[in-house]
Length: 266
Image (tube, rainbow, N blue to C red; front, side, top):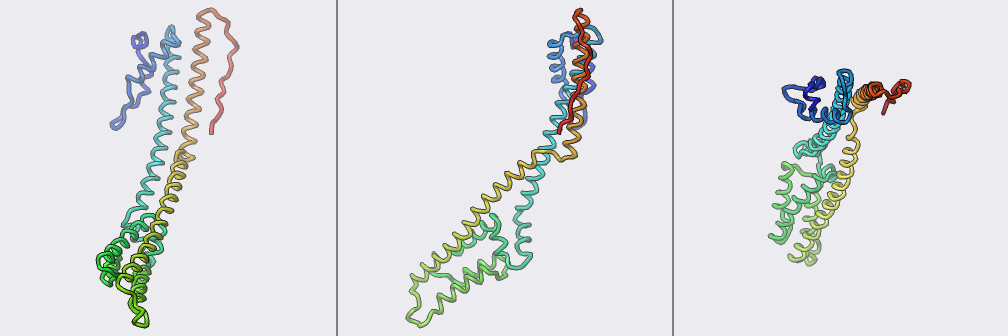
């Protein structure tokens, strides 16, 4: 426990704030491991050991800062994507240009809504035996009472079924029911298939955006790398000086001093 007996100057490197505080016990444990490994003797070697520990601790902090920046970047991107899928915001976007059917069909969320609403119309056909105006008006109500291409197509299909000529060629009730269900099934399948494609596209896009977000911005990354390079130089210099001091103390030959070069990364 010599490290603790002599005190740890590197305690000054600890961040102690209101919202964040670094672990003093962790720093002491790190200091003790370095002490046991390097076995400093005398105040000069102890000072160099303390510089080594301090530089190492700051390097660890730089790595945490980098991880934090990446987390912020990834989370910010996810929040932006979540905001973009908010139903109310999407509804305003879909209805901004009038007929919402086409813009709805270009998103997984919109297709899912259309599938559910057409499913309600289909359930009404199952119960009533035909496509009724009431069912179409109910769907129209989903759009705030405003007509659109989907509602218009349903009305056109119903009109075709009801006005076939001559009268003897009118479909039987069972045929009406079967044709209405077949028509709705085709439309539901179209939107469901489109939804599945958009879900797959959204997943690939989300993976790509997450992959792109695992690096901090160029400005932040440059700042972190410069800080790390500075600390690595300090660490290497202190270790080289400590080695020379210990060799001198042990009466060993001391090689000519070499300048420590740490290349810029990035």
